[in-house]
Amino acid sequence: MITVTEAAAGKVKQLLDEEGDESLALRVAVRPGGCSGFSYEMFFDGEMDDTDQAVEFGKVRVVVDPTSAQLLVGATLDYKDGLQQTGFSIDNPNAQRTCGCGQSFS
Image (cartoon, rainbow, N blue to C red; front, side, top):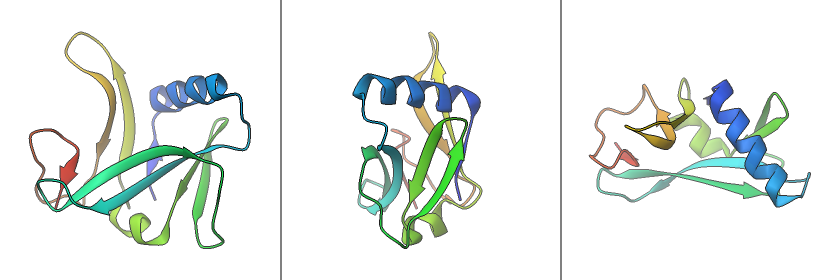
């Protein structure tokens, strides 16, 4: 399953605090689409399925569905806040090819 860096967990925690709903988790998913075949999707979700995999990073709960989990084994979610790059990124060793936007892979 995916790993979350300390920087990413901190930013997610900040965003969750702004939402004000402690039942929410960060859902990371892989969906068909994008220019390379699959794209990443991240959103806050309060509904969990019995088959979801969940793991906690600090005070942040991350949830992944079983199909996405297979494509995210060994992947790392990071957050950068700098001049060159700002935002979340996923480093996925399973991706054979990525597109220029960084949001799509195959």
